[in-house]
Length: 308
Length: 139
Image (cartoon, rainbow over all chains, first blue to last red; front, side, top):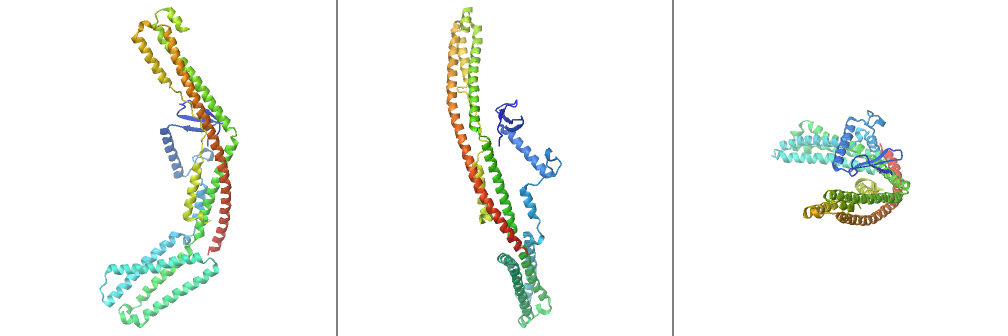
């Protein structure tokens, strides 16, 4: 905002530059009206800010030119909320889930290949791969969503532990069923070669383990209030800045009570100066015409007529 | 309070930007006056007249020609002064408008301060509530 003060001609073209001085004679407002200069200045200013951030120094003498560049309040909030344990970060849970999906896909591929070799059925490779990926997704991604929803619903620590116990029990029961099926006659009669060794048990154990890992990691990493807190802090900061700006506007208007009178007097001065300028231009041209006519006169009487 | 978070925050941000764009800063500008008809046109006319006199009848140039030019320049001055008066009335109206706008901005700002302070109180209460929930939620 331009401070109140008188217009100052800084010695350059008035139409290109305008500046204002305060009561102490210090420059408070400076504007260049040339678009070319402004573009150049803007580019230089952008470069200065870029360099400042790049070399992480203030570049301001009052703060110390070589002092480290201070964070603004928004950056401080970002910094405060970036210190988060690895387990509680969103991308970590995503990474774990993706890793589990890849691991399970390999595992299921081996199991399905075992089935096909046992039954001597010629199955397309793409179909097997698709089935393996689908199975891996369903066994890993669904528990991840389930964990997040559960974490959202259950907030009390006691209930969390209780539910965690129930979910763990469900997975143990599932594992026991798989173990039972693998050991039972149902599979051993149909897939004798596959179940000749205990490799199938390990292969059946891996997806269950990955599912459990996915569930636990997603359960722990799901943290809606952390994000909400950050947003609220930023909104609060924005509101405070709004308020500061509005208070500044009100103060500026209140302080400048004689705004209308000042503008009117400035306008009157401009009117007077332009009016005087018109008179001066008229006089100048009158003199110019006389000096042009005098050499063409034929007698002193004409010259005296002219000078009247 | 949910409108501070998530998708609806965009709406809040848009509202903020709209509001700031409604406040015109640096609106105190007194425009310079222009001289109409321009001095250049006067100069062109005078030079044309002088050229005609000197080429058409150079022998008949006498002192009375000066009075003719004076009358022409006085006419130009009167025209320029009357145009200046018209411009001054325009400027007075503009200044009155600027003052009105300034008072409107102040009233608007006071209104927004009241609203923002209420919103800030809401945000503070929501922040305290969320902080408590975050502490409870933490395992």
